[in-house]
Structure formats: structure tokens, C-alpha cells
Length: 408
Image 1: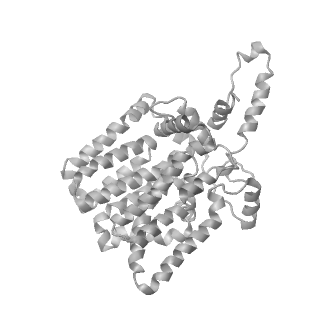
Image 2: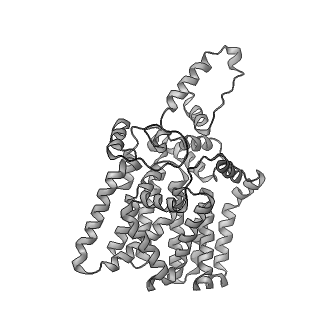
Image 3: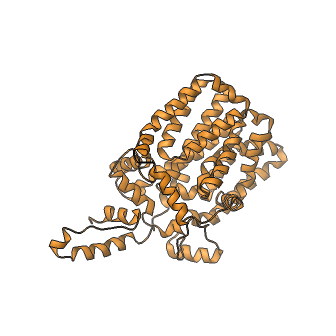
């Protein structure tokens, strides 16, 4: 269902500004970039070579990653002892969350990040349950690839170390396998680390420039939690709060308490370092899974069966109401009318001045017209001037659009 939704949506819209950048990066493969590690450029290159440059082509992999996150959330719930309802409600919570519907609809690192975090959490649960410490190799493999996707994988890694040290699972540090797994992650990440060292860590300079410029909308801790509740769908709040309670206080959740500290450390770090709400998304499937297990036990009585399925149905209905704000399933004119009728717009992330469309949608328009205008000016220059003329873009979206669309 999720895969089909993403393949359907976006037919009335164009390339998102970041997608133009990643496509440009895919024409210049390297071990690092100012904004991100190299995996997204490599995945974009593969998609373009196999499927072409169309929107459905470049958005297929993020849609598959989103569907994989739904599946993996259900598998984590099963590993935690959950039955069909626990697995179903946990997976459904990811499926209906507007935040995931938005990020999985576009080509970006954010679509793949929850897959790596959830994969590592799944491996950690398996290690704790089975005692098979060789699984740390798989943990290290996923973490290393995750670091090549987005540097915030470090937050998950540090959170895991803290969580293990604060629980009896600190015993894992007395065996070699966790250290070998960590070394494997470092080896996989090493090319990008060396690239950053060689280029004097431009990513950190970029983040500092963004903070200095005041580009991000200020987001105090309570506002961050409020936006997280909204973008995960308010009806899922009882699920992920119950999931956090499971790891912290439930007797059966005691062995997995390290994951509670991962969740707390993640949200706390984001509040301090860079309070953008979608940075917290990757940890949410982990608490959705445990929340599904908790609610399955709380609603175990036969007379509450209707409550279980009724709540799931209401989640789907409410998500459908908010779906046009997360995925572009409506044409632009219909969306503008719908948002006015609902008196609602998605929360702003950056301080750009916007028209009737939110930034996520507005940044998918105007590229063809901009390139056509520039091409008209460029081609009307005298030949002797044109050969010496360069085109300067104000941002990577403008430059990427000219790279992609200019030849046409």
C-alpha cells in the first residue's frame, strides 16, 4: 500500500530542490560532499543508470526504503514478543505518519535513515535475546553503511553505547565481537571520514553557517515535541509513549532498556544540536514497535477487540485527512483550496518567505521556467561573448536544474 501510494503521488509536481542537487552529485561521484556522505549520490547514480531521470525512476528507491521501514517495524515488534495486533499496529503507525509519508516520497537521505536505525535496533534485540554476539558484525555493517548515508547515524551509535553502559547489557563490552563490529563500521565509514579531514570538515562549517544565518525556524524543546506529535499523527502518540514506557518500566522490556536511552539521547541531542523535527524520525519506529507490544497486552481481553480494530481504523481515516499535506496526491489548485478549507498548513522548517504552498511543495516548481529564461538570455548573447560566459546559480537547486534541464 505504501509503495503504491508513493508511486502514484507527485504526478502533478516536479523535481524537489534537493533532488536536483543529488542528481548533480551523482554526475560527480566522490567520497564526500559539503552537505552529506556519498551514499545518496551513489544510489541516485544507480537509479538513473537503470531507470532514467524521470521522477518515478529517482523516487523508486526511497519508496522501497519507506516500505522496508514499515515491514521492519513489524518485525521488531515480533522480536519483542508481539503477536499479530502488535506487529500490525506498529507497522500501521509508521504507514500513516505524515512525517514518513513526506520523507519517503522524495529522494533524500531521510528516506533511508530509519531503515538503518531500525535494522541496527533489530540486530541489538536479536543479540540480547539469543546471546549470539556474532550479530554485532551485522550491526557494524548496517551502522557503517548508515554513516555513509547520513552523519546522524553517529547519534544512534553514541546512544547505543550509553544505553549499554547504563544497563546490565554492558557485559557485551567484555567480549570481542562488539569491538569488531565497531571496527567494521569505522572501516566502512573511513573513506568519508578521511575526505572530511582532507577538506577540513566542511559539513561542520555548513551547519555553523546555517545557524549564524538564522535560516532555521527556532524550535524550543516543547515546540519540537509538539511538531513531532503532529508529524507522526497525534493518534500515534499513545503508541510511542507506551513504547517508551515498555523499554523503561515494563518487566518484559527490561532486557531492551538500552533502546530507551537511545530514544532519549536522540531527541535530547537534536534539541541541543539542530532542532529540526525530522531529525528525530529515525528513532520513532523503534518505539512504535514496543508500543504495539504494550497495547496488545493492555487490550488483551476479548471484549476490547473492537477497541483495537476501531482505533486502527480511526488512525487510517485521520491520516487520509492529512495525507494531502504530506504527499502531493492533489493537483496544486485542489491542494490550495483544501488547505484553505482545512485552515491548516504543515509546520515551517526554514524562514523562507512562501506563497500558498508549503516549502516541501513550493520547491518542486519553477525549475523549467527558470532554465528556459536563462537559456533565452544565454543563446541570445553574441557568439564571442557566449563562449566566455559562465552561469552562476544562487543555490544548488538552481545550479542542479541548469545541469539537468539546460541541454534541452
